[in-house]
Image (cartoon, rainbow over all chains, first blue to last red; front, side, top):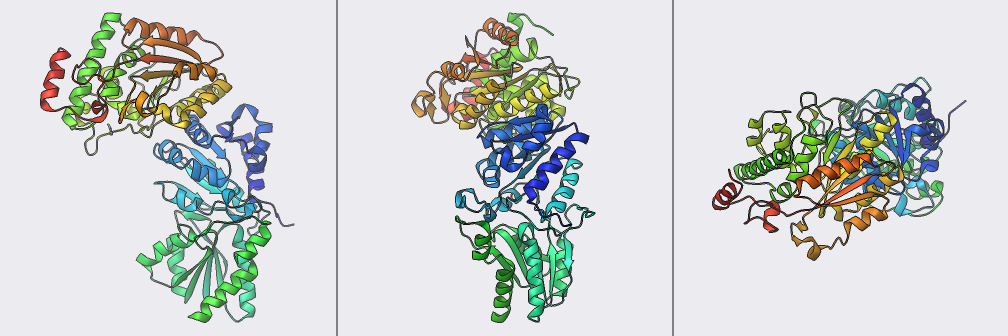
Length: 312
Length: 272
């Protein structure tokens, strides 16, 4: 049976499970514990859970103090507030002293849906990637989320885990194990390579099947880690394919596509088209409609790929 | 290593001399606030903190977070004087490769509890350390400096709310109120009004003192330690650049190094 749940839900359940075996874990939230799913941990370990109210800067500063006193601290709120509102306290009080704080932010990207642009972070990967030493990870499904969390609890230092609100279809098997900074080849093709990450991974895989029917053989690579980025895999794929694409539920400025571009320009110049949010704010609508509107559903991705190839 | 009031006053004076020398040597840095806070800092480290200079990573130590990081010349001097590191290091302040950065960089080997410099974050960080003590059933106390200019940052008041909400009675804020910030008097730039009333309204135990009265500094630290169920704020009225006539109450000396002539006057007036 496939595990089709939102990555935030996988996060909440896994966090509570980790709480059993890791007494050093402390969890914090900023008045969104029902939405971020940290309330599952809170219920089981109330003495290790702190709600700071609607105060994201204070969330980060307080987390840093707890972490520097010997704890592994998981902090959660919506992605735009964790990375935008609190960016400088994350930089100053968490990243600079290398505090062991895991910023696990939910409601990333446009799949927040009806709440609209104020709540849809399309810049969080860019913001976190810019901070020295910050790891940036984006799970594609529940299994990858949980494996990344196993990695996080045994790896000291700051990290950003980007989670979503919407139900995510399973991509990885239950025995998948995340390796630091490694991408995963999900599909082998010969013509184009589609690099993807997060929520749109399943749609990208399905788009590849659709492309096959149109005579385009596509590889699909899931880049769970944006920073560090799997440069060797990018170079290998650039060597084997004529055209590369990145697909992400994030701005094309400073996201996965930008990270891949940085590798290609210095190590293996190649043509890369970046599919994602094209320097725009999101808007209100059911998330399925938004994904379709921004052409990040199976059909939209395939259409964009074919369009770019036709224009070459 | 408890000291008499006279001994503490003498040490505080030595701290001021060191602050001026460090900033003069580096030809950059912030003397004014470090000098206004020198008395309370001395009282804290010599007569209050449960701290072992030979083991700055001791888990049960009391902690001090210098939220207004620009005032670090005073903290570095105290840490050297109590023997955490060699005083020679002070003369590399703000130089390439020195662990004594222009604003503190977290380094427990040197007793620097937190990276600070971006204002108004230390209150939150220190609260976190105090919450960790609760989780771990430890008895240590956590002190942090806060300042008038620094508390114009909204995050300070987010943290003030949290400390009272969680009844952090192992938390004490040492508020240095010299009423001078970079652009002038706080009362002109952005008037803070009554800081005491603000902390009281947030649910804190507030003690107001003359921050240059060493006996009052010691008494306030003793009083704060006895408070149950509430965080404590000791609000010290102080003078920027205390002890040197040409520096006192002049916003220029918030962050400008002294000329050679001013340095000579300072050394003379501080009796060095």
